[in-house]
Length: 338
Image (cartoon, rainbow, N blue to C red; front, top):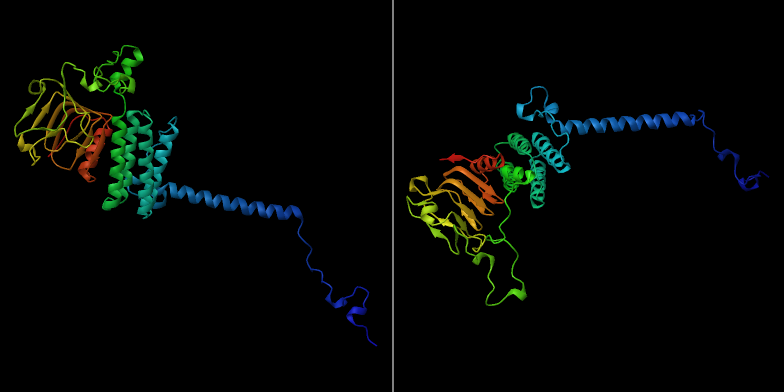
């Protein structure tokens, strides 16, 4: 009788035994070397891909437009937030050059958010920083200058940059503080001090705005201006308009509804604080705005030696609004747009 598979000593037919390979296995060191080379090649290709994405001029070739060429690096010693801002704008340029406009908008918005957070934290920056950032925003816009959405996002970032510049202390003030010659702050000035506590409320209590200061005129409602009016210290009977009692969105000065230069409305030699003001249609000369929400609707405007301190801006998102925002960000005090 023939043997079955169960009658074999091992309990299985020897024909099912695993056949040995005809090739000997590779040594362990060879296997490690192959894996290491593969990993190195993968890392090299990934790094080259990142470099190409961050250098759009290299991707476009030697004939790339001039605005795609990176300017010389001058970020040595820059604060971390400034480096992050530049990186976001460089990525916006790369994405815009590659045709991914949505990603370019997102990176531009990221840069605007960085500017907003720095302003809220009263972060100081040098004039060179503002000049460099304006150039970088120009590069982002020039990737698709005919795309209205991208232009709007870039303009909003310009406005944030202008607000950051408005929050910067004046150079003369910084110099005086550094030398110890800055005049002491007047605690009785309008808006100074803290609100009255419960214990101070009574017949004799007075809010800071109720303090009479020579030259300060307190407005609780908008002031209308007629055609050819000149509002200066002589006409105002003071040099300082305090509109901080007015709502933040309330207009301080109301020129004729046409808001054109031919109306001849002029404001000269005043400091204006609080509330809101539209710049269109008025000739502003030797004026300082403090903590005012400035509006610009894209019309005619004339600024001559005008300063903005801790102001916020609501400008049109077109080329005229971008031009005004750039002028403020670059510290220019005079600008005329017909």
